[in-house]
Image (cartoon, rainbow, N blue to C red; front, side, top):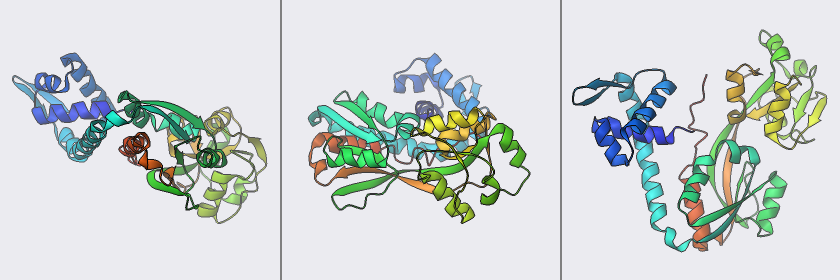
Length: 302
């Protein structure tokens, strides 16, 4: 979701009907506004505005895009403005725990806005489910992002996002299976690369889609899901990955999606009960939740 700034610019140009006026309202230069519009046109693949003598006229594509996104842009602006208005009491360092891949690929806009308030310093701790909850329990981390819903009553949480699980294979072996009816038994002929020995994402996918266990030979165990994608691209076996980690690889032909889309995982923002009494933690929670469902609402390239 690197398009938020461009979308905001698009909405302002659409509403004002004039690039000069939009630039003034956004406190940007006209060339920067034009660049943002060109970027959005490249993304949607169609012209958004027709230049006229006294401004710009939106195309039907622009009308449709404005209808779809303008309300969401307004909500984000309102939430961030509300959060910033109470930022005077939140000075300090915040410790956030979570999976490295989600923090790296998805959470950037939320973390950037948290830092742009210039009130909070951020220390990020990455790790798996066990590490994350240990950090919360030991009061090392004040907030955590996790795909595991907390069951202990000592925690409170909100649903932050969703990720779709996809079954992907290296391009050589994957192309062989594109014309086949992929089953769990057929996949057992190939090696699998996994996050840990318990096959967490793979087990979930096989149970939901095939109603069968995965019995493939484990080629590698890698605790960093980002590296799993690289191993498969290099020609080794298959795995199950979150959509945001493999959609670009699928588009580029470096990964082959086999089988149907898998189940969705909920992503949660978690904290210990009573933690939100501290203004800094409450502030950070609000900033991060202002960008809830950033992956679920993302439009990935086909």
